[in-house]
Length: 67
Image (cartoon, rainbow, N blue to C red; front, side, top):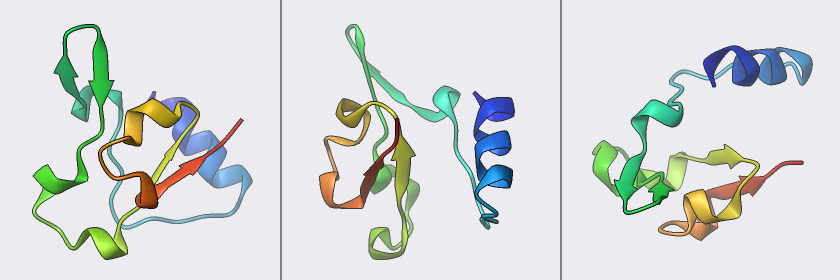
């Protein structure tokens, strides 16, 4: 959720150029994915910070799991 994510980023003193949230995910049945390939950006310079590893299973090298 944007409010929570923005709070976390502020707490760790991190500013990002772009942020995407839950409503930007791709639905497949009961599962949501964050598909970086759909962004049209260089995914070598893109990360997913998430508390659910399955959300970035399409690009696992770009995922950072948080508690």
